[in-house]
Every structure is written in structure tokens, then in C-alpha cells.
Image (cartoon, rainbow, N blue to C red; front, side, top):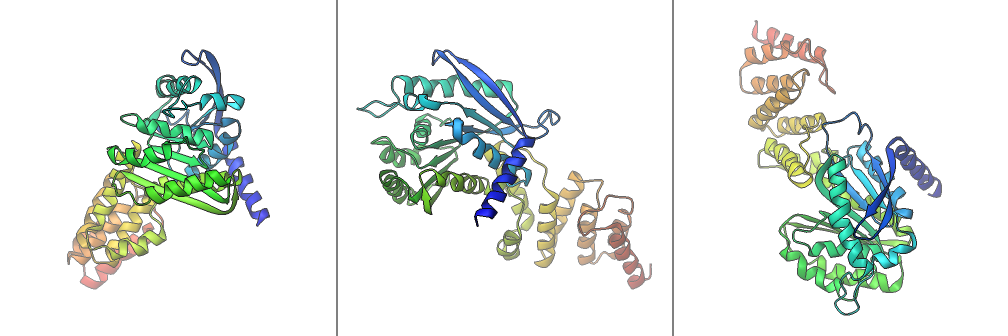
Length: 382
């Protein structure tokens, strides 16, 4: 088990090394001092000049940046999440002052109030102005800084779209005010909370208490996830919480899996093509990304339409594929299959034949297309 974990960590950090990390010093008027930043840019950031990227903001970047950046790069490489810009704030011993709050109202105070404004009024606008960013931001914090990111929930609208709370050391009232605030937030919020069975007792108990309330909240705009890792300490839970959080927050972004194909698509009574369109509309609405539909997802929904005999959905999927991938056989194959099932063999034959000079995709080869055309010729005597 230890060897497997070591191999995985080596792979993650090896992948991270191929992403571009830049170091900057930010002169903050709010803080009256300079702060060091670590910024990991996605692979091919410099060449993909039309592409925009979500932001993952990491507090406690002195030790939290590398595990977050490594996971973001790894998940992005396999398309389990969008490629993203990771911004880390170096804090060191200043983290305690940065996270300071008032003893009476428990809101950021003194240096904590300055740090709150530094992030919202200086740092994030700077990142937006100097990098190609999508309108989706996740914040990551651990104990004191995990508590701190929750203050941005009380802005209207909240500054962040996602909150990854790793063993938060909550201020005395924030774990009760969060459940009161959530129902009043109109924008979509992703909220992840993690503790461990061997976490610091007080922090584990407060996380468990908050979880008991949050899991009962019913809201279409609040996506909540919780882990209590067996055997995990205050520090080791970080390594397990980060990938779990990213996987859950970006679940809708992932390519359609075999499980989704079997458990969802093959059991759908509503049009399958609409499921495909809705998936990418959700990606656009949530993450600010207008991605082309993946070939994998065209094939999954096309095959499911065939299996369930949703022929009109198959036609819609074929026409979408022809528009997005006109130089491939993808759309022609599914359109030809539609014509076959609709009793229009001549149209099917011509559609299959028309793809003889196009790029092959997955199992759909030019030979397969011509074989299907030839079989129609034999069957119908054309």
C-alpha cells in the first residue's frame, strides 16, 4: 500500500513539473507589505491563447500549494477537471495574523480584515487582469485558513464558487452562521468539508457537528460533500481530501464513464441527446467554459441511443457531431445508422460512402463505413 501511494505521489508531482510555475511578489496597499505568490499555469498556457481557465486559490501555500497544484495538473491531464490556474499565497508565520478575527463578533479584524480585503479587492482582480481566467474560483484552506475562506460566503455574491475546507478550525460562531447563510445564496456553491478519525478532537467534533446540519439542507444551488477519513490525522487527511474534493466538485465535467453509460444513459426515458446538450450547458454555466463536446461523449450517447432505439436522439447526436467534427466519420456513421433504422437504405448507403476520405474515430473506421455501404448494395440490389 505504501509503495502504491508513493508511486502515485511521484506521478502527480512528475506531472506537475511539466506545468509552468511562476513566482511573483505582490505589493499590497491593503496589507502595507509585499506578499510572495506561487502561480502554476496549465500546460500549453502560452500556446492556447484563446483558452480561459478556472482559478484555484490556495492559502497556506508554503506547504499546501504543491499537493493542490499536483492534483489539479493530474486531474486536468485526464480531463477529470478543467485545466486551471493555481494561485498560492505564501503565509508562513503570518497565517495567524492573516486569519485574526474579533473576539466579540468573530469577523475578520485587524490584520485579518486587511488580509480579507487584500484577497478580494487586490489579488483576485490582479489575477483576472493578468491571466486568462474563467469565472469560477475555488478556495482551499487548512485549519485556520479553512475557517478564513468561509468569510467570503457572506459577501453578496460570494467571492468563491467552491470552498475546500480541510480540518477547519472554526471561529466560535461561524459553524452556526454558515447553515443560516447558505439558503440565502442564489449562485451555485460547492462546499467540501473534511476531517479524520484521528484529527484534533475539537476540530473533528466541530466538523461533525457542522456536517450534521449541512447534510440536511435542501437547495439546488448548494452542492455539499463531506469526508471523515478513517485513520487520518490533522495533516494526513490533506492528502486524501484534496483529490476527493476536486473529483466531487468537477463530477459533471468528466467524460461520460462506463458506469454513467450503464446506470444513466441506458435507463433514460427522456431524450438521450438532450442529456448530452444539458451536460455541456451545465459545464458552461458552472465553470464559464464553452468546451466542444468530447468524441467520447458523442460515442457514448450515440451507442446508448442505438441500444435504446432512440432514433431521433441518434439523428440529433449525428448532426451535432457533423457540425463539431466535420472532418471525421463520427457524424456520418450515426446519421447513416439513423437512415438504416428509418427504412431509407439509399440515404444510409450514400452517407456511409461519403465518409471514405474522412478521419477515423475509435471503432468507426473507413473500412467499417464502406462495408456497411456495400452490404446495403447487396441487400437492396443497388
